[in-house]
Image 1 (tube, rainbow, N blue to C red):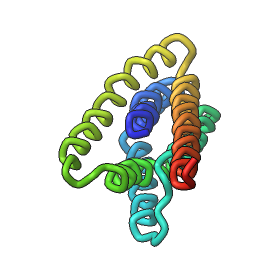
Image 2 (cartoon, rainbow, N blue to C red):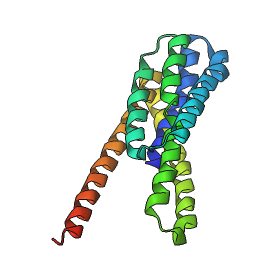
Image 3 (cartoon, rainbow, N blue to C red):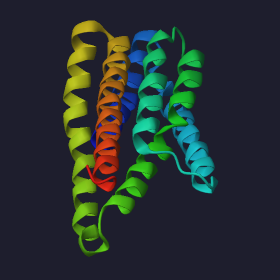
Length: 177
């Protein structure tokens, strides 16, 4: 989930710049990306103060679904609004991956697990950048947001199915079957 979240987030940087170039407003990149970051900051603040955490795979699903419509922006104002909305899910998704990890990994190996978490962050960026770049180069900037969003949705659905399978196996094991 962590890998996929950063894969999705990589699109924000790459595709926003490509979109603004095509729209004729490349100098607005810093301002619009700051709006995206503000959405993430607000989302992370709300998530951090909530008393009931949300599992990372649900947040990844929402992030992927919120990223796809950014492809519909036709001007910088729309791009800013749509990125702010998707940004609202960035911070919470990454935070939730750490929280989920802390619940399933024994404390005796938590340092190693956090190392793997960091590697997943880097791998998501390393894979996301070139793949999103290929989509943009071959099909235009909107495809970058679609590819990133669908990638996040696909992995989130896989994670949801695995979580459901794990829960059903845990229930079977605890009932003596």
